[in-house]
Image 1 (tube, rainbow, N blue to C red):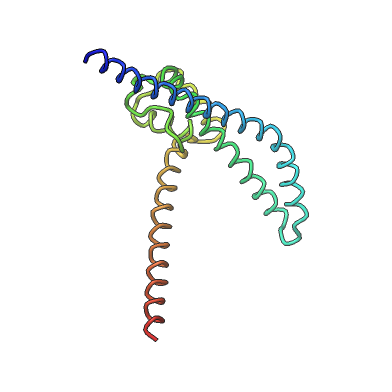
Image 2: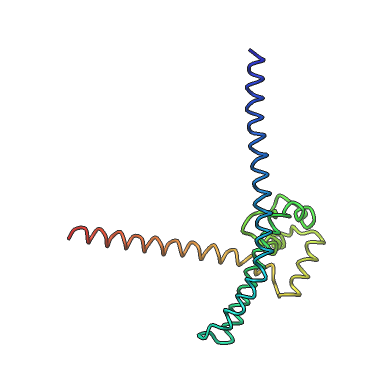
Length: 181
């Protein structure tokens, strides 16, 4: 009886083990694919963006510059989020006094945003404070602004969701009204 239970438990453990190995390999493959696609597409996409922005006759020079700046800022934010997720545990060790308070590594947060939260919480060590000081030289109150941008994005999403719900409600009421006639 004990032998049967042992093999039953071993079988389920092995199944879970190989499932986890398979998931890990797929994740690594997806990362490699993303890196290859970025390497191949980055330069052509940048050139296309610049040419398209310049050729668009409806846009003025100010619009071309702001659109191109927005494009590059979006890329920088995406890379910043990747860095936060990929190196979260390392950054926790490197920059924080307590890695449980507001840790790095959460998706959809930038390194600067997490630094801003930890600065506000008084949870940065000397290296973390030095990085925040360096970022503040590049842009005044950079980490604080990054932290606040999370609030603004969340508020925008909630407001947008409410607006969509109202539109859906209006459509359903219109359909119900038309169905009567």
